[in-house]
Image 1 (tube, rainbow, N blue to C red):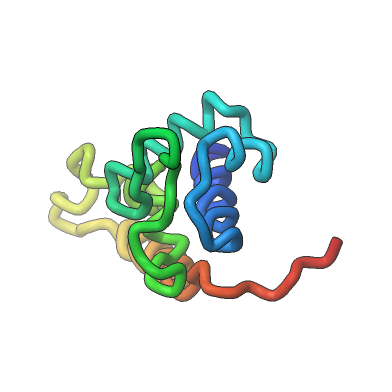
Image 2 (cartoon, rainbow, N blue to C red; image 1 turned 180 degrees about the horizontal axis):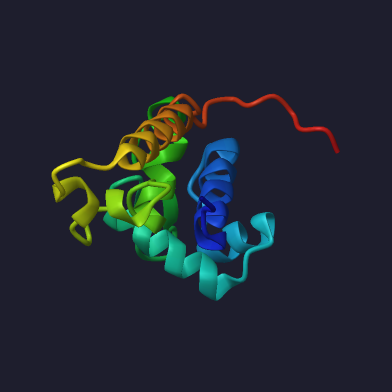
Length: 136
């Protein structure tokens, strides 16, 4: 399983807004994260639609977190951009899994589900509240 570059950037954008602790315009977010302005705007739209970020229009407009950083976890951010975190497409719900419908079932389906659940739980355990300074 690999998260997309867009989800990686979304995590960085949320981290940036959480660290600044104030409303930021998209250009500033772009400059602070190193994500192009166009891509930053695309990601911010998805984060607004998911309820993680709130946008404000006008001269003092910009973006801020809709909740406290401690109440936002990595799973929410990644899924806002990439959709459900699953390691196999049979778990996504987009396509029926014909292997689970067979008489003998699918041993691997359960393993994929268990691994996906572990990944989801790990991402849920990481929030955006006051992270220690990173090694530079």
